Image (tube, one colour):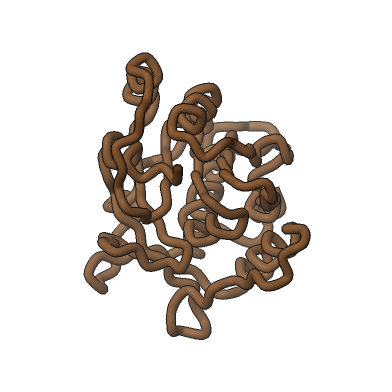
Length: 220
C-alpha cells in the first residue's frame, strides 16, 4: 500500500498521437473486483508495463476511498505470471503478497489455466510474434468468459503497434523499478530501461487487443 502515499490520479498522463486524453479514453474504469494479470518471459520484462500497473493500482485505491467509510489496509488482486525460474518480486508496485508473483511453465495451456484460476479480468501480454497455441477449448471458454480487456506492452515501453501512451514522473517509480530488478537473484546484468527520451518522465506505450490476439502472444 506504500504507493497510496506517493501517487494519485494526477500522477499520470495519457496520450493518443501526442495529444492528452482522459484516462477513460484508453483504460477501463477500475473497481475492487477487477483482477489484473501481467504475463512476462523474464522477471524484469514486466516493468515495461509498470505505468499501466501503477495507474491501475492507483485507481483501485481511489475506488476504495470513494466507496469505503472506514480506513482500509489491503492490496488489489493483481498478479504477475512469469515463465522463468528466476521470478522478480513486484511488491514495490503493490503486487503483494509474494504468492501473487506466479511462476508458470512457458506453455499456453498452463499459462491460461493459471490466469483462469485467479479470475483475471484485465490481461497484459508482451509484444512477441503471434503463434497458434494448442489450448483446450474448455480453457479458452473460461478465458473468454472472464477476461474483459487485453493489452500488449513491450519490455522497453515501445510495442510495435502502440496506440496510447501512459507517462508519469521518474520519481518515485524509478526507485520501485530498480528495487524490482534487485529482487532478481544471480543476474547482475539486468537494468531498468530508460523508457523514453525525457529524463523527467517515464513513457510507456500500449496497444489494446482482442482476447484471441492476446492468447496468440503468450510467451511460449
